[in-house]
Length: 333
Image (cartoon, rainbow, N blue to C red):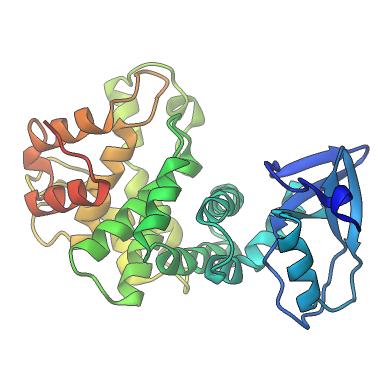
């Protein structure tokens, strides 16, 4: 391939494109290592056409990296039957994608979002599936490593959805929780993983709530509110027998709506709340406030933090609020 042919390939590429019946999905150009066997055909996109760059069952070589770098190619493509197959490819390769230093942080954040959405769609459709629960745990383990870098957290938050969706809310709550947990001194990988699992699955009990209540476009009445308040207990019962779920994660799911002043639910307890439950309670509230809902507009980060810091100050541990403000880099005036 000559320079004119390759010029501009992959620049500003979309995550997926269609060409007739086939669908092509973007993957990072730096995914493969020298001498690694390629299991899928790899394509380049140029002037509306997909060009076969390397066929499957050949080995990647250093010359491939140099050629793509020289010509400024930012993306390769794989051909899939649909998005589910593409997401499976990304999920299987997530650990190496996140660890590869040559893949830019924006592309990693996009892949995190794509992968988490696929995993959460699956687990919310069958939350009692051990295989799907295990996938969510493995995803969180990768996220804990990824979020060690503050730049990665900030990049992920740039992509944060401001229109409320259970899947993006789960991911964002988990990212906030892991980052806040690390900020207050939680260093254990296992504890951070439990925090991440509990936060990403904190609302899984809502699958047992009537969708007409959850999708209601206005404030709930008293009976509906009581029904929704069952979801922590329902989520706990759904997952308590899953071997891959850490006990601390189960506790987070059960306690994330309890409050230190005893005015939470489902039990109204105030003593012996796990610190990770308090973390998830705070970041869950913040993400909900800063997302558009059917019945209200989102608050700005500053206004949400001001409300938490003032009117809701008895519901959240002051130390956590202070540290969370630092994590976000936002100052409530």
